[in-house]
Amino acid sequence: MMKGARATNAKRRPRSRARHSDAETRDRLLEAGRLLFSEHGFAKVSVRDICREATANVAAVSYHFGDKLGLYEEVMRGGLDMLAAFNATMLNAGPNASAAERLRHYIAKYLPRLVKPLGDDEWLPKLMRHEIREPTAAAQLVFEHAILPRMRFLAGVMAELLDCDEDDPRVGRCVVSVQAQCLFYLPDAFKTAIVPEWPPQSDAAIAAAVEHIVEFSLAGIRAIAAKKT
Image (cartoon, rainbow, N blue to C red; front, side, top):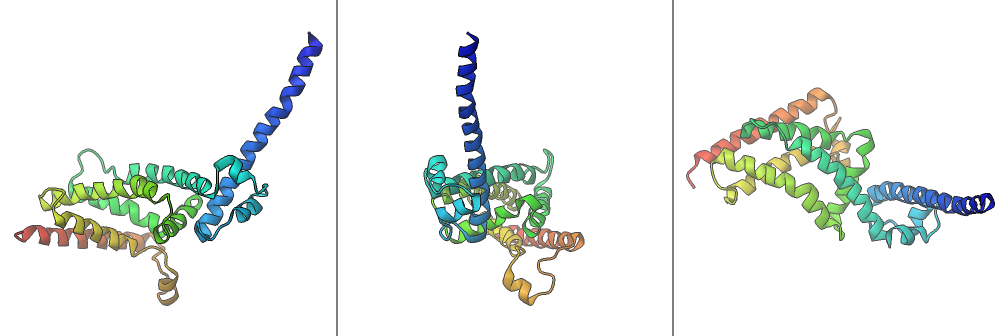
């Protein structure tokens, strides 16, 4: 009995080590994918590039993810999980917040994240910018899980401020206007080259930008609401 038990345990150990090794390889591939896809985009990264960065066999991507797109989509899902957690904070100003307070809360959370991503999250906005410029099969995932919840939230805010239904064309235009003002503050190599200290980096400068966008937007929305349709 003892000999048989020892033989059985001996046979199991290599399989356990193999599973452990497989998990480590998969994690290295995901980390390499995050790094390379965020720096260069999906199209400019090859499977060989990823496996070289991950010190893995070229067949490893196929084994773990099916193909390069499968790996990319897994990287993207990890990023979308992070965005969902951020959205949960950004889209919740409290149960009794007015429409104006919800708008202020949204911009106050959103703009600093655009300007100065948190250290471990720096890869994510880069990846999203590549996806927006050169959409892949993951574009629908990004829209449904990252963009659409924000648009629906802002649409509800605008409809309340304008005292109209959410399908009123003015709602969509106001949503775009607020988003565009925030997105203008994204880090940009061209702006940085011609404008010193772009985008604003200090907490005070970012807070001033938030306040401007909020007040400018509310004034514009009130003016639109006052006009007869």
